[in-house]
Image 1 (cartoon, rainbow, N blue to C red):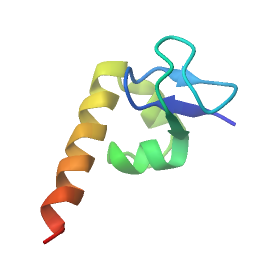
Image 2 (image 1 turned 180 degrees about the vertical axis):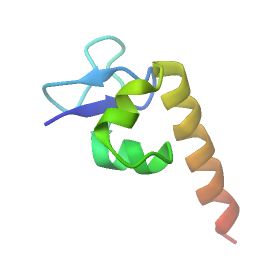
Image 3 (image 1 turned 30 degrees about the vertical axis):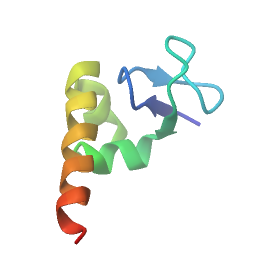
Image 4 (image 1 turned 45 degrees about the horizontal axis):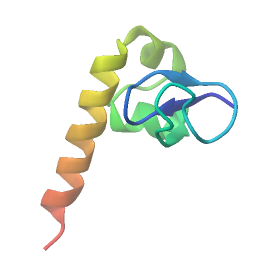
Length: 67
């Protein structure tokens, strides 16, 4: 299963932790939703930095909805 590290934005092909920085990795479908893209191909076309920015924006959106 393809996963994406939430710290560095790189793909993680095995396991639930990134081998680069030991950051947690989420399934690609969750990463795509956070980055506001519809498919794995669109997610792969984003740079790792753009993916991290997408995660940060998604986190901020979620925190803004909470009272």
